[in-house]
Image (cartoon, rainbow, N blue to C red; front, top):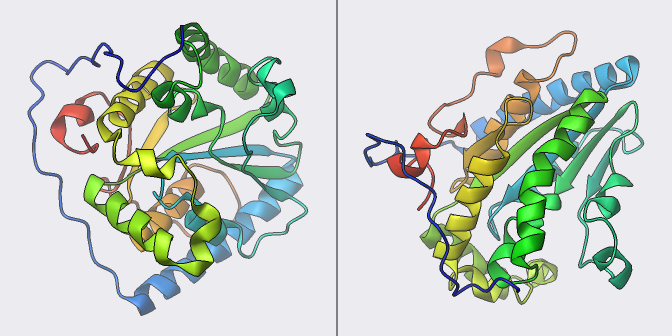
Length: 280
């Protein structure tokens, strides 16, 4: 039986003693400070890529988030000055009939990083835990199988030498509404518009529940989820870049510019669902 947005689901349990609070306000950054910091971080990324090539590393970066959360812009800034021969962006479209009748992970395997490569997934196999779950594009059985298989699949990749870093860009309902409206009226953003966009606000609560279930069931020590409060695109981009550089080894690292703000970017913990750090 297929899942449907209106179907009742079991809620993710709230940690005992967790109290709701107002998250810290997002910091402000002016254009000059943003551009200067961005350039310094992009220089660090060039150092990182040199190290990845020399050490034959395999790096997989997964970016998930609600529609209009800022994944495209973040990826654009990360890869801006990197060699296109050793960095790839994967943004798969609607699955084909062949994909629908294959092992679920099969179409993603072909895009995994080889030695010397960093690959960024703009959405990933976690489509099944998000849009497919909410919009009823998969059955309950397919969803359950995915939630059990995803951690095992990722563990196999890690054991084979692939470093996986998973980000979820979290935005508020009002900010998403504002961005979707801008997208509809921006002639340069028309390619981003999809029928799913129209459902993003309508099924906000269902997407929240699906996100929370995904976090709880696929967050593991070897492949944790890192949550990014992304209502400010410039701040979110810089924090993701800092975090990525922090968590990968390379020579000549400039540690003094890599400190992240724990009010903006943090490893998932169930307590954040109730505390207000993760959008309800």
